Each structure stands twice: as C-alpha cells, then as structure tokens.
Image 1 (cartoon, rainbow, N blue to C red):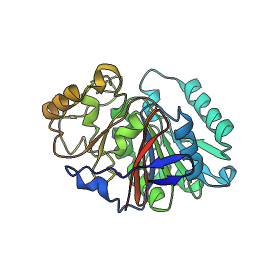
Image 2: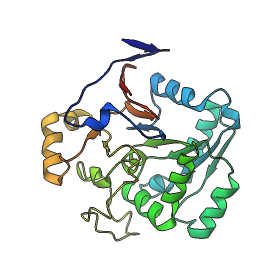
Image 3: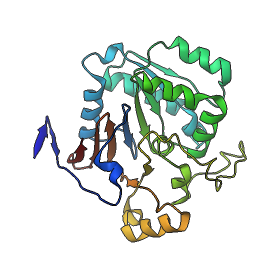
Length: 260
C-alpha cells in the first residue's frame, strides 16, 4: 500500500476495461457528481492547483445551469465561493451559448494562460451542444493541452466523458434545453462527449435506487453503453485523472487509484 498525504492508494484491477490500468493522457481532470462537497475533493483540488492559487485564471462555464432553471445569481454565488474558498485570483464567466466563434476565441485569448476550466452542473445537452457550436470544445482541449485542469460537476462531468447519453439513464435533463435546441441525441455522433478521459463515460448522482448495480447494468444494456467503462459517481464522490494516475475518490475520503 502506498500513501500520498491524506489519501490511501490501492491498486485496482478491472480486467474488463484495461484502460483503467494505465492512463497515457497528459490531461488533468477532477470530475464530481455534485461539486467539491467533501474534504477529500477540496484537498485534491488544492493539490492540483499548486502553491499559488492566487495566480490562477479560471474559465467558468455557466451554460448548463442557465438552461436548467438556475439564474445569474447562482452563477455569481458559485464564482465568489470559488474565490473565497480556494483563493483563486481570477474567475471569468464566459457562456458559450452567447459568445461563439471568433468572439469566443478573442475572449478566451484575453484570459491568458488558463489554469482551470470549471464546467458547472445543470443541463447536460445545453453544455455539449453549445461547446460544439461555439468552437468552445476545441478551446477547452487546447487549454488542457497547455496544462489547464478541467473540473466538472454533474453535467460538466458527463460532457467530459465519451457520451452525453449517460443523461438518458435517469432522463432528468430537458433534451431541448428549455426549447432552445433541436438535436437528435440518439445519434451517437451528435451525443459524443469531449472524450477527455480515456474512453470512459460518467454517471453522476448514483444515489439511492440509482446506486443499484442491477439498475445500472439494465440502463447500460438499454442504451447500448456496455462497450466501454462507465464510472458511477454518487454525490460526494469524484474521479481524478492526473496525467499517469486515475483515482476514484469516495465520499468517506478514501480513494482507489491506479498508477502506471
């Protein structure tokens, strides 16, 4: 058994999906079910930020909550909370529904070196659609290639994965994003996520009846998701990809990791 500060690392062998055994990505992600709600997740974020969070610039994506019944005051509260709790120097809100193409490129360029991309909870379909239509998905990947940390909460975590059809499992989200988009999400190409996580998909809010492996397996079969690894996250849990390490952080502050 290895130790890393507060975290216990236990090598996890899952032969069904060998991708978990080794991460070759240089990307860094912290994906959660409902945000950084536990000590363990907060400490992991602080570790990934490094010693000078006040020098970090955050691109905050509000697209999902603003099409899921949340308003600008929720976004402002989240932004101020990030600054206050983690000492982040600059958090800029850029909504890819309303800032697109060259205008988006210019706004992102003005941010300079991006330290964190924060993809907030809300409507999964709105976030994925507008990242694609705006060109934001390419800008996200470019920032991550340059070292930015991607932090996802709920919808933001689903979008980071292989397919946003994970939202089909519970079918909570409005597929038209309040009547503003018309997309055939049954089309696997249109439903493709950012795929930042080695071919994994993510199922957040795996609580109560949704935590049942029988129910999860039935949903995977129903929607054709048995061909790749689906990471299930209950509220308070997270999944970290940090270059050559992949870790599942449990709500009780324990962690199961693989280290290549």
